[in-house]
Length: 200
Image (cartoon, rainbow, N blue to C red; front, side):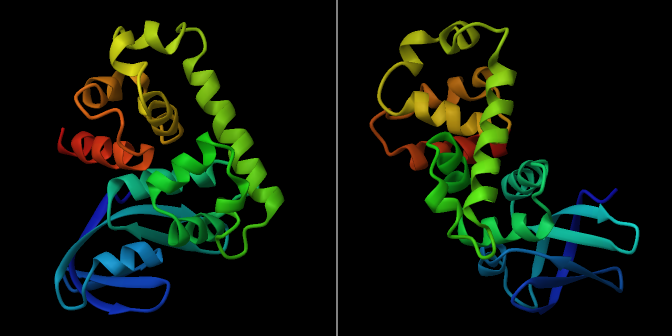
């Protein structure tokens, strides 16, 4: 229903940001990482997700479209609600979330407040399973991309897998990754690719 809200940031709490648009203040639940990127009394844009329950409608807002998409990916996991999604993204960046899932790093995900080992394991299991299904039927990664040499070296294959967790197809990200230094850390490759994808 709402894609984004843009207006003056008139109020914040440790977990919310209120953006005034056309005289209406939209109370957006958000992450610590988003709150660090926005300043009171300045014009901001938050990418939003409206969660409709029987007893309430909740608006969630994020400083970047990537953070929003990662939030939606997290809450697609059975048993993971918006509160847990916010907790994970308050502790970790989208790039760190993708890396943790791709590398089966349960410990990193449990750093999020209120997220236990079982929940972290479920996040990893379900999202890696979604990634595997999205790549099945299209052959190997090299066949999908058609750029075997470009993706076979350094940390690029790990970056492609992690970006897949965030919903990007190998064919989408390979042209960008093939132009980057494959010896860069995986997290940096992910961040640079996301920035470039955001420009398109």
